Length: 555
Image (cartoon, rainbow, N blue to C red; front, side, top):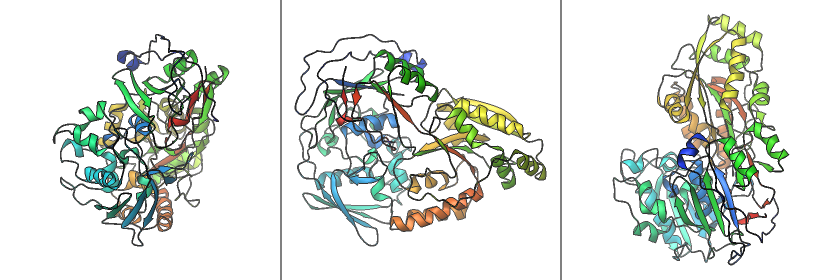
């Protein structure tokens, strides 16, 4: 989720500033301005700007307090973690840590750090900085900073803080063993620990900058100076400015330890409407954008644009709320599964190249099982099973979101319409309930007042816990069931000390889940990006680990 290089020697049109009100409706207006044709290329760069359109503004520029893709998109240019990913994959790879060694019991990891790295404020990256960051996360103050909205990934990964409501986390200590050696000790094994460190939330940040622009306890850290004006990492770009409601401008970090960025600037604008993003690319106001609508691909290709697909690292599903009868009846859930033609759902509403899903994770995850129970499309069998369950006249509320596009759900209205037709064909009466995204998430995940529903997940790193654990690790209002055996199995699998042990355990869990059938995994849609013809060097990643230092733009 994360093209050969051609240097640019000419300036291009600047991106227009998009008014916040216009972005909300997708009716973005634009006004051109000229860039200097003799723009300095600096050290290691080839000059010019790369302008990219996301679907929304970042929430914050402090990645620890972020959980949204647009904040992480910017963070990946400014910050780096101990662990990255192998280009074009979801697999972990060395980054600021050149290597690591784990103890046999899985509790201790020794990181050997890269030499000669500095934060963009000129201070040294070293083992003391590593421990500062781990201790900062662990000592997140109780209150708003520990809320799921802010420290979501630390809470999900490390499971607790030094103080607050939950102090039963798995982090124990960080020890400085030398300038370039840090030792992290956990209280319990977690085989996914290394992979999880590739998350932008766990990027290394400058201790000096964090101390200088500290936020008082009880205040929202997303609103402080650091998170808005002075984010300080080791990455190939630094923050130039954040013009709220318009754009984020990133300047090349000429003191970067690695290969310098080829463009002088990277500019990120927010355009909520997919059609407006398409039009901005065609008109030359942006160089690339994310979340291309399936219906727009042929138009863009006809205009000479380049389409780049990410490997699908997500899953779209039709969820069942078992708190609503008769969805608590397995036979009813199985009947609905036999009523769904996944191939038709894919061909009618999802991008080309998408494959139907058999389980609640994509086949790129290392615990993917080939032996799960599948439910073949058989509408006559579905009708018979409903009759046997006494539900021949079944009415179901069907919740779905509107005015939103997600990598796993690019066209929710279209997907809903296909499924509604299929369920009606077996005699199920559908009560449509549509909500805008913000309200929809609250209804489907925060209340028990919903029925069958469309939702999904884009994975963050290559570990089955990031899919199965997220969905089914505990009792939730989305799914409405209490299955202690499943919860315990997921907890035990998460605590295994090696990946090999985990793979075996999660394959069994995935097979059990598909027999229990809490929902129907529909597909892993292929997310697409689009670029102007002159853009080179952008490498798509299944986990969106896309750093723009290698990008060039020709007029």
